[in-house]
Image (cartoon, rainbow, N blue to C red):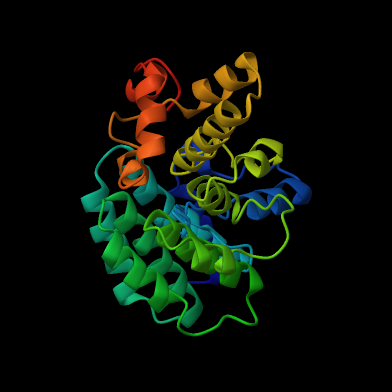
Length: 281
């Protein structure tokens, strides 16, 4: 099968909302690639969010156009499955993808995604082990992948209470970065750096399947920071609305061993009532 035919086939099997229409300009295509890093790893995810991925779950800007299409068609539906509550099945599917993968760069990326899914499932120890494994071979020629994997690990260790390592792992500088913003805000929030979060203008990810969880996590971090710094009732309510979970237990992996977040969620009913079925998830 020729490359052109395979590309056409890939596009045909994508869900309608994930297709890049033929009429889209090159600028829009480039923008889609730049935004898609997730994750996440986040998560993703990350990665994986990777990213997470962190973790999330992260789709990396270092991917070629062909790899980008593969990531959209293969990975995003699994991240959406996790967002719908079936993290176990999503983890199994991504693990099978990682097991079959022979490209070192994509395998590291997928392991990062897996670490973010493990984190969201409440398995923090295995999530940390996978995140460290994904970073074992430094990605010097893929800086976007490198920083997404580091940010994903930073989020995991921060949630475990290792603040010094988490802050060291975060990429230097505080310019908005769609690849690492989810992890950065979680790390800062876990460290109690409320004013930095309140002042930070993070980059929202596209409202696509598999990515909305990361946007909700960032809005949650912004809300708790505004509450701590007295950022204003209207602003706080806006972020509370954005953070409303899709599932009642969506933020459990974050609030584990984090009493301040538990108390904040209990004080704000919007955060422990799932969204209406008529609202966008």
